[in-house]
Image (cartoon, rainbow, N blue to C red; front, side, top):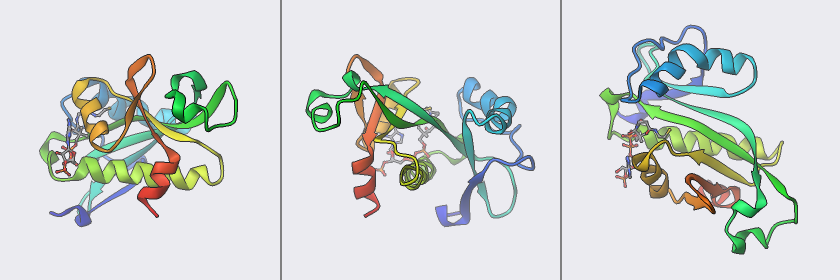
Length: 170
Ligand SMILES: CC(C)(COP(=O)(O)OP(=O)(O)OC[C@H]1O[C@@H](n2cnc3c(N)ncnc32)[C@H](O)[C@@H]1OP(=O)(O)O)[C@@H](O)C(=O)NCCC(=O)NCCS
């Protein structure tokens, strides 16, 4: 099936989350056991990848509001911004694709959907960047592939300015 045979929708009770397996037990467990409760408590919103035939979760990502200390940004970017100590961002907390669907463009499909959703939300509640916490070097390299850059002092935390996200969809 091509990516067009798949869609991404807000996590609902009817989604099967038990069979999801992405190679990270923590990310599998989160979807199976914690994601619904986190969404219900407005801590993290989850969005799942499903195909046209079933409600089986084949991938997912989460989004939350967050703040960033301005001194974590590269100085050349920070000096162009208003001098607030903390800045609003959108946190892409988790993103994973089931192992059965790897290397078929689904990670990119999920990431672009997350960025587009973040951009739309930022028109109503400002966020100056999308931030991710890469769980390992492979995850960091995935995000760098899409132009995310490491924050100062915290190389595992990467960001993409919302201006760049806007250009992506312009
Ligand atoms: C990282 C992950 C989401 C990638 O998903 P995927 O569906 O296999 O990736 P895609 O097929 O969409 O790849 C899209 C592009 O990213 C590149 N890419 C994929 N994984 C990459 C990696 N680890 N490092 C660098 N580039 C990567 C692909 O080569 C492809 O590039 P191209 O478009 O230029 O050909 C997936 O491997 C995964 O779920 N890993 C376990 C969970 C995880 O690490 N999540 C991220 C942090 S929470």
